[in-house]
Amino acid sequence: MFNWFKKRSSAATYTNEEWIQHLTPPPLEAAILKLRSFLLNGLKAALYKNVDRGLDDFVQDIAQDALLKILDKLDTFRGESKFTTWAMKIAVREGYTELRKKRYQDISLEQHSSYHPENKEAVEIEHEQPGPDQLTHESMMVQKVMKIMEEELTDKQQKVLQHLMIEQVPMTVVAEIMDSNRNAMYKLVHDARLKLKNRLEVEGISPEEVLEQM
Amino acid sequence: MTLNKEILKKLVSAIPMTHPDELGCGDCFEQINEFAEMELLGKSAEKAMPLVREHLNRCGECREEYQSLLKALKKLKIYS
Ligand SMILES: [Zn+2]
Image 1 (cartoon, chains in turn orange, brown):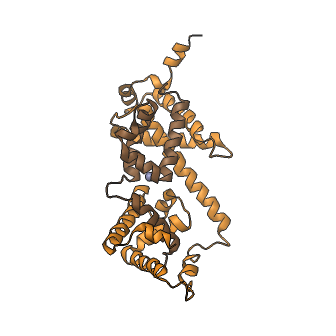
Image 2 (cartoon, rainbow over the protein chains, first blue to last red):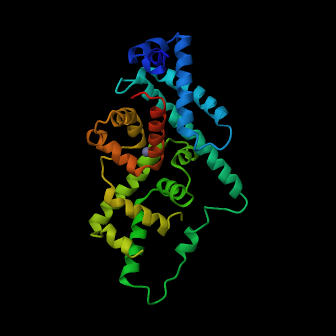
Image 3 (tube, chains in turn cyan, red):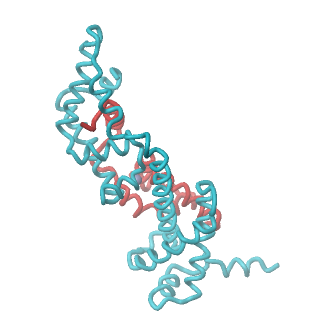
């Protein structure tokens, strides 16, 4: 009964202006509670498939950390969407950042004794000797592009690509390893792609041609 | 030596979609709440913000977060 009344008291009913007003220090206790419960419910719906055990504890921690971030960044909200949508995106990112770090820790612990990605593949493939029949125009082109890639990419780019593409480390975690952030990691890979693209254009080599030979 | 043919293959495969104006994860995150709102209101987010769509297609981590954000917003019935 009186469903419309219940609905009016939900988190969605503050206007953006009210949210900002109520959360600006000193924040209104009721607004904090409302936002926290809103984040908790959203996070549960967003993450339940990704967390096997202890979902409640996990989202409690995430909601708390996200809440602090939201309050801290309040003055960067520019009203392009509902405030709650903006707040929720911060909480979701917080959740995934933690999940990815945790997942990667688990994996590296498991693989610690037997898996040394730095030495894998790179060595094997580099020393692969083609038989006389295989040393064709095509494989020479692949080798040429390999050489171009070595010339064009910085050590840092190479290292990041190794983590991302060979060791399959999530970008969020690579950013942590490199003491950087995800945006910078994306840009670094983007620059690598762009450099290679430009250089292949100069050399008159099409990407499709290279892929056909691989 | 850290480069190998696996990396080469992945980089070269991504070249046709590579261009100087791509958004990074930070730009995408900046705009994703607006993008999600348009999507849930049935407005054409992809047309209004094509670079965000493109980043989501390319970046698995941003895409995963976006899909979860939609799930959360639907559950909370913010736009219904
Ligand atoms: Zn991204």
